[in-house]
Length: 511
Image 1 (tube, rainbow, N blue to C red):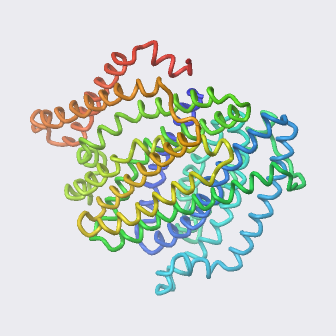
Image 2 (image 1 turned 180 degrees about the vertical axis):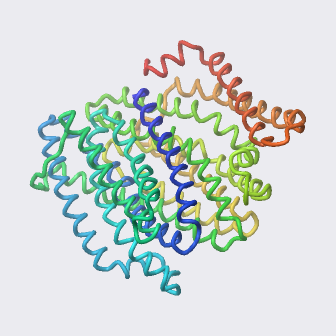
Image 3 (image 1 turned 60 degrees about the vertical axis):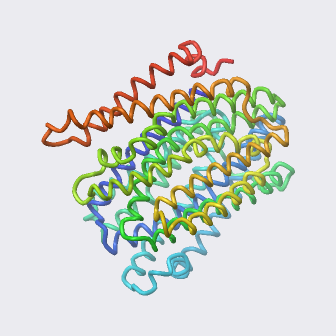
């Protein structure tokens, strides 16, 4: 399980890096005018639906159901179950696609009402949406095949698939002259990537004897349990998307630069969440689902505890840096051209507010897994929606005084509420929620965090005196020095407090 977490995390990191390259190319080719606005909206529409119906909800309902059928009734029944779901997914996606293509004007007018006053942008958005919307159906199939692979301990293809989106878009944008506009090139890149991602996962599934075939959908007990779990999962994913929409809507009322500060801070904050937290959640869910289906509850608790322990250990450097030197991070990474010192200060303060909730955001999937692994998608939904209500309420209260920093802080509060509520409900129901080894590790993790923070604070205070003689690159050099000093202290303390044998055992999954 631990090796798989590193596999998924590594591919996710590569995806994020290629995503930065894609953003640079898009900025150069599309610019920031009406065409870029039209494309971003057209790209966002299928992505929001994908987050709600496909990746967000489908996996949390399908993987535990598939693992349960495979563990209890065998591989033949599990294959038949997945084949029936495949047919159902294709039929539903064809219906959604037909409705979307026939009513694209209405869909765009409903979800992006501000475009109605700009006929040019509206027309471009409709054109781009008709190209990009089939991507939703392809990603739904990618999610299904990826779920089957993940449930059979095959993780790399599903984790690497998103890289192909970045590659395809860079490819079409590099030959944008062959398309009517650069926006059309980007839109076709999105659609082409859907076929490439599906092809990669189908190839990996066929190579390992896990390929799916169309089967007659059956409303048997397993399928009914899956559908019952899918409903609350969709509602929960919609709640998360609602909070994201709220950020966008509220930020539009803030002073100029607030949206950009949120964007840059969130880009940095999402790196450890994606590379560490989401990677651990992807691997942990099928692991716990199999163990719980086999009634190995001690093994499920052990897997969950080691995943939490590993994610917290890996995220400590990110957390310390975002709390102590957020402005140095923004200056070193982004402060050039039109990105001013004032912009770096605003983005840095926003990053620090996000960092308050970094720990719960990287472990929240581990706290959801005991519920999802039992087919209970309703309880995590209630916790998520309750936290979203508090989150949005705090945003409204804080936006006037703290602007985008208040929005980021409210997001962090929502993360803590979600994890604490899930932990209490898991304890109340007798589910897995950490072990004695994890509790013994927490004080040591806290000590490492404090030492890292002190090291970064001292380096950021002393080093600028030495760097004053440099004609250029002072901010980048200061950030590099902080990384080097913090990395040395982190490695030394991890070895001293946990020991080489313990760390090697953690990485190898030993008890």
